[in-house]
Every structure is written in C-alpha cells, then in structure tokens.
Image 1 (cartoon, one colour):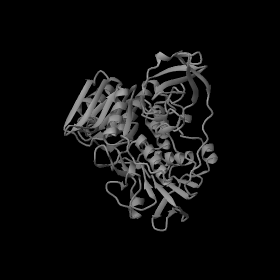
Image 2 (cartoon, helix red, strand yellow):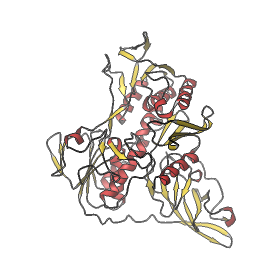
Image 3 (tube, helix red, strand yellow):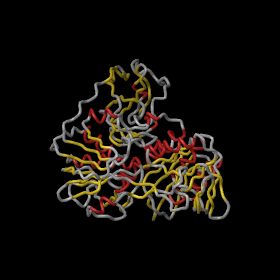
Length: 507
C-alpha cells in the first residue's frame, strides 16, 4: 500500500552486474541509490523499472513476465516494462523507468528517465458522464484523462466522499492498521487538476438513452455524448425486528466503515450476521481490535459456495484460531438492545451488530431506461449496453466471459476497475475487448486467498499442496476444463493460472 521504509536490497545496479547473471526471460531486484529497481531481460531487450507495485507495494521480482510487461504477484496489476504504465488495475500509478545498457560483459543501470508525456487523444472532445463514484467509475475517468481525452468528464456519485479504496474498508482500515489518508484513491486536487467535475451526494433519477440525457433528483438535466453506468451494488438489509437500531451496521461505504470503527471503540461483543467475504473480513478486523466476535450464518461451512469444502473448513479453522466463534446452520430472528436472538433458540450478547449477507446490484436506473437486463445490465465485450453510446461496468455489468463461455456478473473490486478502464478505451474508439481472467483476493488476518477465473459450479476440485498448511493451489474443473483457481501463498502459480486461462480463451 505504501513504501515499507526498508532500504533496498540486492546488487548496486549503477556499479553493474555480470551480464550472465540475468538470463533471457529473467528478472532481479537491485537498487539505484536509495531506490529499489527491477531489472529484466526480455526478447533481447533490457528494462529497468521500479521494483515494487504502485498499488500495495508488491515485489515485482516475484511476479510474472508476459511479453514486455510484468504482473504483480499480490493483486495481479500489469505494468509496461517499456514505459512503466499501469496497464491493468488495481495499480493506477506508473512505475519509474531507468536507462540501462550492456557493455563489456556487464549490465549497468544509469539515470532515471523522464516520465513520458501524456498522449493526445484523437477522440472528439465530447461530453462523457459517469454515473457512480466507485471502482469502475473512477478507473474510467482516470483512464480517459491518462489517454489524453480533452472533453468534459462528469462523475455523478450518490456517496458523500470521493472514490475510495473499498477493499481497505473491511481490511486494514477497519482493523486499525491503515491510516485514513490511505483510503481515498486520489486527493481532491486530482479531480481539479484533471478537470473532472465530481458531484457527491447526487442521485440520478432518470436516464434517457434516446436524447442522451440524465435527470438528477433536484430536476437538473445533464446532456452527454457517451455515458458509463457504474451504479454498483448496495448491501442487503435483513428484515428483522430491531434491524434499524443504532448499533446495527452494514459495511459498504467509507461512512459505514467509520461508523463501525466508532462503535467498536466501546463495544465488547459483536455479532456478525453472515459468513460472506465482507462478514468474515469484518470479523477478522474487529478481532484485531480485541473485540469478542460471533458469526451467525445459515451455511454449513463459510465460503463453501465459492471455495468448496476444503478451503471452507480452513477459513473456519483460521478464524477460530483467532478467537471467532461460529454459529453455523443458524440464523438471527431478532436484534435487541444488547443481544440477538438465534433461530436455534437462546441469545448472544451484542453491543455491535454487523450485517454481512451480501449485496444486490443497483439496476433500477438501467431498467427504467429500457436497457437490456439479464441478471445484470447486459453488455458486450467492449462494455457497451443495448443502447449505443451507453456503457456499463462493475457490479451491475453482465458480460460474455471468454474463459467460461457463459455470461457472468462478478462483484469484485479489480474486475470493476478493469471494466471501467476497458469501457473508457472503447469510448475513445480504441476497440478493446474484455479478455482478462476475473481476479479477487480476500484477506483473513495475515492469510490472503487469491482467486482467478469464475466457477459457479464444478464437478471436480483438484488440490495441489495442503490447504491447512496454507500452501496450496485449488483448481475448480467442469468436464475437464479449469474454470477457476484459488491459491494460498502460491502467488506465481496464481499468475500463471490467469495467463493460461486468457491464452486458452484467445485473450
């Protein structure tokens, strides 16, 4: 997430290394002065770039070279080795680049290159409106300006804060290990400097696809030439007696996370309703604050629907190891002022309740506009909807997935960001199909679980390694085809699995 402050290690690349120490297709990490630098040899060319990912500081030397790009081992960001550009989210900022030469049987890294000038887009200076201030909307706006789009960009967000790093809200920030200034994706000055009109607390009530106009709650209308619909999803509230009490929370927005942190300051017992990703990450973060945590959920195993029984059992054991108590195959029938009533009978003390039973896509605006809907907003590989000039991305978008061969909708951060980027490129006329393997990660204490692909069902699970020993690759197969791969501390295998899926699908 930020530079960890450690001095760079490895060879002094200014003094140089023996040319034989860097084989073709290999990379190593060294330093130029106090800066950590990655040196790579690819296709007869040498490259020197920053050694750490600009997202969460992942070590790129442990990643994967693909053509003249490098992929981060932690969260699968892609960077150009030639220019340093962050080609695929979650990283958005570029790597630094250095001059490098080979002479006299040695490789030397010299002075740092000046950042390349932003390109000037040949796309008309039209009006682009983005509805939604989440991952997809922000990534689209950032890509439009990065590619030199000179027209107007308006982001209409119903949130009360500028776009934030949402995964942090249930992970490090909620746990108290990340400061608040890590949460915004960019500072307020970035929107001003990039001439992006960010309107917060703004509700769009109507979208007219024919005359290309949106209507706001106050009656104001805004015309557009192209529009990105990125309305995201909203947490599911349970219809329970007491669900509206002040100590009951959901977790989606920056305000939600802040409210839970404020309540946690005096809480002694928390009940998390739901063993979803958000529910379990909230449980882990609240345990880090030394609060007693109970998880109540109807499933037999947490996350079994996504990961299968083996990882489900591991996740439960990991949380129990940290003091979480599970009440599975159970539910909550009522929430009192200081307890919850269980479906099985009895009560649990609770001065803080977090509901984490999933989210539902915000489709109402698209439905009223007459866009094609099929368990989400139907888009093609360019993210364009059934209405020309109107695109959709993120939690609402349902697209034709090359890897599984089916239409899918995925509610994950990296997917939303990349879809926003792809929508932006296609708005600019740079025809770019969505061809990447979906990726997400879930953090439980110090254990990350990476997942690539998408498997809503499978007929076989193949496990390489030992799940309980936190060293495994788990493949989800149907009819002999690998649809998805989960991994624990097998970062390179995860990257290779994503690449194999993309190559098999023609990506």
